[in-house]
Amino acid sequence: MSASPKRCFQPRSPARESHGGEARIRAARFPARKSLEEFDFKFQTSIKRQVAEHLGQPDFLAAQENVILLGPPGTGKTHLATAIGIRACLAGQRTIFASATEWVARLLEAKREDRLEDEITKLGRVPLLIIDEVGYIPFDPEAANLMFSLISARYERASLIITSNKAFSSGARSSATRSLPRR
Image (tube, rainbow, N blue to C red; front, side, top):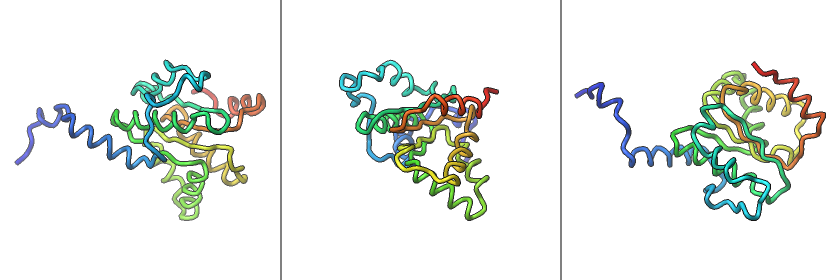
């Protein structure tokens, strides 16, 4: 028995969509279940609630925007990144969460197996990648090049959230701007 074309394009039931969102959340491998509603904006006053809410909407990913959350440990960077990622999953978008060290290990393995280009292409199809804890452990030159390859391949193609406890120096900021020209 085949389904009619009309039936194939009908919206999914809320129960089915909820189940899909939960499956995407599990596949994303978040470190914990967090929400924007749980975030304490009174404690962390440097983050505007309206900005966080905007990033939790599907148009953030449609615009292929990137977010960098900087601050010392314990300020809620991972909480916000996770909450935004969970919202993306619930909105039907695939997301992958990993620490910077885990991303480097994944890319190194792909390189060793001579499939780095395929891995970066595959990751480019995921609407949101979250790279947590950039700067906690220094990268050697090979690891830094692999991270640069991943990030530059996604530039203006898919969204990325990066958390770090390291502030950008003005030199690093201008260098990054020159390295990734606007297309």
